[in-house]
Length: 461
Image (cartoon, rainbow, N blue to C red):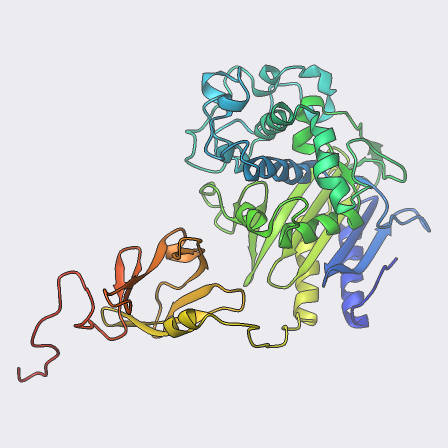
């Protein structure tokens, strides 16, 4: 099965071979995958144990914890609207959550940094009706915290139940209703639903020591829905991946989805190959950084991954409790496409217009004796980077007050100011209190500590 193919035959064969291998070696009843590039589905393929009945891009599978990314987007929308701050304590907006849970911040819950337990109290929540946990107290239990808050990443399903309840409290509507209205409808994701909608796959467990299968139950998770309830398709999830890579003003702006990708808490010991942002996982695969989320519920495995730099995304869905490593498959699909058919660079074009004052600031600047270059970027921002050796490079965005704010690296969040002399000429740049001048230790500039009156000298002086 293929759809909207725009890849070379060799690339398509490599993709299908990877999917076929995963289904066979993982002993999955079925496995469907799709790749997005340049804003459209570039390839899709499937393998199944039922001849002539392979799933396609319209077949629903349960996606488990990929649901958390949707919940995180809803919370970020509340932040962008000014209805909450990420540093707010949960109790401020969701009264009655108690002295332990209520003091956790929204940021900590989004990044799994609050120290909450990974799971609810027994019984096993994924295989029992949501009515078993009718109240938030049933979800978090009597001793909800097992780590100091803010010290490390410890994945918590109950944490996202709390965030779902927060969304409901501030919107005055059900989590499912808010999700449909604020994300699914604007993005055209009409095949993503809280309950299964035909055509959909059935969930199966495959015996570990024999080629036999057992059907898995599909429970309504109730309060736990914001942590793992959703059903979706490869087509819908590729559309969601495109949004997470670039943003969409109807849902969440590009700056906010980029904020979701930034690491939110130190990883657990030994887990240095990956990180977790605000509802998004990040992992290193060779020299490539991939973002997305994985998901599992009894009978289903799912992974959504994307590379912003390569503009490639992959979704892999399977109806098996265990077996196919959907995360590894999705990462491999991205690598196959990005390596075999690299993204074409955009053609160079000159700026449509330029501010003469900004243009005059470009070029070399010295911090002491270290030379840096200031460059004007096509998006109107600035880039500051060392010209020799390794140093502190950063990009900057203009503020309305005439200053610039750092966007990455050492100077992220720091302020760059143009300091002028009494006659209006530029005296120096102030970057987080560091002084950059046009010449090394420019005697005419206001440098703290001054410059030796005798100036530079040779060995004989």
